Structures are given as C-alpha cells and as structure tokens.
Length: 278
View 1 (cartoon, one colour):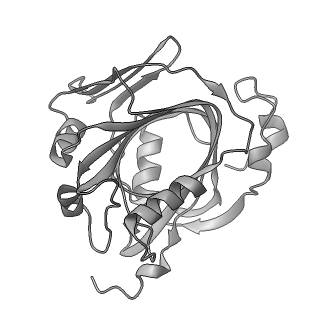
View 2: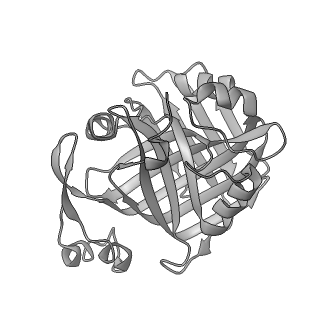
View 3: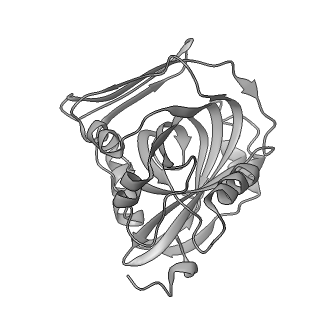
C-alpha cells in the first residue's frame, strides 16, 4: 500500500507520467481496520457515467436527513450511474458500479442552482451512494469494513475497446441486472492535472457523517450533453429495481473516461452536520 513510485512508473501498464501521485504523499493513518497507508492510488482507470433526471420527491425519500437532493430543473434532481474499471491500482484490479444521488454541499445554504453551477465551475461534486457492487472480495471487504459503503459481489464488465461502450452487471449466479450499450464518442487527450475533478461521497461511518473525496485526473476523455442512442437494459436485479424506484428519465450527460488516474482518500468527518439533531 506504499509502493515506490519510481518503480511503479516502470510498469508498462501504468506509463511514466505519474506526477499526479507524487504531489499527494501517503501517510500511515488510523482506520476502522487498523493502521493503513492512505490515500489509495489508482494508476490507470476507465469509466462511463450517465447522469439522469429524477423526481425530487422520490430522491428526497431515499436520502437520510439532513441530506437534500440538488435541484437541476424545477421538480427534478440528478441520479448518477457509473461503471468503473480499475485496471492498475494499489490493491488488486477490480470493477465497480455506482448509483448515487447528487446532493447539496453540507453546510451551504445557497440556492440549488447556485450550488450546481459552482460545482460545475469548480469540478467538485457531492453525492450519496445508494449502491456500490464490486467484482472482487478484497474490494468488497475494504469498502464495507473500511468505509461502511453498500457493497456486494457481482459480475461486472466494462469494454471501450471498439467503437461502442458496452457495460454489464449480473448477479454472481449470472442473473441479468443492467446492460449498457452506447456509441463511443470521439476521445480527447487532456493534459495531465489540467481538469482534476473531486467527487465527495457522503455517508455515515459509526454514526458520524463523513465524506470520502475521490480526485480524478482525466487523460483521455469525452463528454456529451443529452446523448443519443443510449440503451440501458434493465432486468430484475437490485440495480435495475433501484433505478426503477428512483424514477430516472432523461439522460442529461454522458462522461466517458478511457484513461484516467484516481486518488481515493480516507473518510473525513463533516463538521457542518455536528449541530443537526437526527
């Protein structure tokens, strides 16, 4: 968990440009599972993310107090579905799927529209994760015991090698859940560290509200507003049922990262909620 970055840079699957990680030194810190080196480094990752509109009332019913969904349009908030592939990282490679509700920043009383515009400008977002299945046991154990996240084992695939994005999640026994098919947009090379995004996952850990910051350094990416020809097939699995319950409708944005670097930080307490009576 504390590798020599000079040796890491020699790995052909990583590439020589790992300056993003050199600026974030690891430290030995206490955690729920004992002392660990943090943060975790993900040297090569890929992902496809779909941002859906969903009714505010339904989203609020899925959020524990005092979290509030951010308003994107009158009466509608945002649900984010993301397929991840972690190809080279400190722990074993694995795949992951996330379903999250975009929420208001803790402690900020500004209008939702102001917060959303600020998030887009500052590339910093906040979300409450409802589901986070993974396809390796080490990833499940680390997520459940280290972060108390809603993780379980599933079969997950993400393929972006051709001219189409293909992603799928099934139960361990092969029972279908979600399948995504979409045209692969034209990728753009992005200068390293020029568009770093921070996603903050908010959840309770041992009764204390915390946020886990994930910093992403995109290197080969594309973004489409109101993308066409997106096919999301739903079955009877837990993610399909969850998306049905959330009432997702239009896809407002698709983000594809064919090559990116990520840093997963340890949970940090949210002091803005300390005075809230739950």
